[in-house]
Length: 300
Length: 290
Image 1: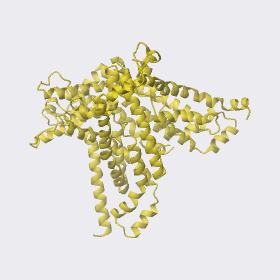
Image 2: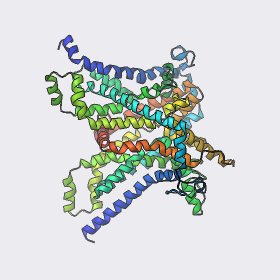
Image 3: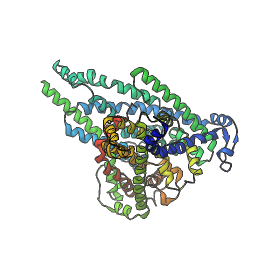
Image 4: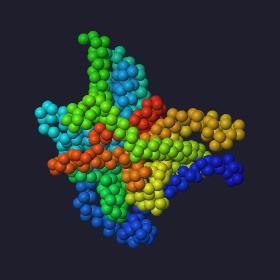
């Protein structure tokens, strides 16, 4: 097609793309330009371009900070525990929902189980306080009524871990079933019928048909989750955590916020963010590669 | 035991197990609703679990007479609607051209977008960008940075790709322009995915917290989450000072906090059931594929 005819035919498509591309350049690539301050002695008055280059000085400084290692450890620890606790729940739940015959009960259950996914961490934080507070929380009230000692769910680090993990399961278990249920609806119904004719019991069928048919989904999601071990959202640890349990609740995302925006050490915080982004990239690409090798499925 | 009986036993077992899950899911909501409707006496003496005690609406009438709370709610509703509309327009505008295989530069644009899914500048450079654009304490700082989610964009592109090309081709032969085809043919066929993405963008904006914490310090522009957070924070501080033995006077009553939490949750619960039937298919489209 000749140039002018091509333009005549496609100009509308380019016009549509124009603003979105400008958006990506400014708001997604703009910050990448700012990453250079990891290598500069940044101050607000001289700006990004005007600040002086300092090479890897800031990296050395960050790698000498004890807090950096604490937050790095916590990030891995919270993510790993979360995976152990939160990963199996949707699988179990999806199998139960799939095996269930009662259609209306299943539908109502699903509607309710998805809701927590749409609730913000601020609201969950408010609810958590009401449930787990030391003096006035519902759980501790129940414990004390039974004559037991209250458990400091919010203010001591090990009980706090339980609180943190509980909120994760609570929020994600229902939503997580969607992918497994989707995989299960794709399974050939005849397989189940054949098993029934052969006299296989329900549990046998779950073990030999249901579970194997979601195995690829399980493996893929597990690997992809392992690839996200170093990335952690901000809201959950920031809101569920507090000063008393900082030894466990301070993670890379909250550390970046605290060092950068609360203390104004922009360069150091950018270094931490860059470290996290680069390691995260390696993890994700690595896990994606492994996932593709093993299951043929990946995110790319 | 006959097979039918054992099947029925198994079904009963499943129903009990799922019911427990569902109750665990609901109990925190029931508790917070119960608190919001109970008297302060009942709350502080620890009597309230899942049902209100000494039922009253007082906390809600206080929330509804709190001007700053209402303003925050109103602002957040407008913000959410505006953000969702803009996000949808931008996402559709980006997705449709990228489904045209013979568009020159398409691969380049795709890479430009996909790269941002794997690497980002991080929050400090983002903050500095917003600052340099003079958007601190401006609503635009809450709207523009998240205008297009690359993940949602990929979902949209794969949905558009699944529309039979013959439909668009026949329209083109009839002389329909790209824009016309998009609006008259593609979009009406894409309602499920559009509803799903609108829900995701809307929930994301409604629940958004970190950006407002970073960019907004003018109380007139506090989104509801930031406003609520300050109450929660207040709670945490109390919890901590209590350990040191100070008393708990001059605090926002628990019922008021609970009512505010319910107040901020209800809008989501009002929208969500209507979109539920769409988003399951939308999520599946975006899952582990692309």
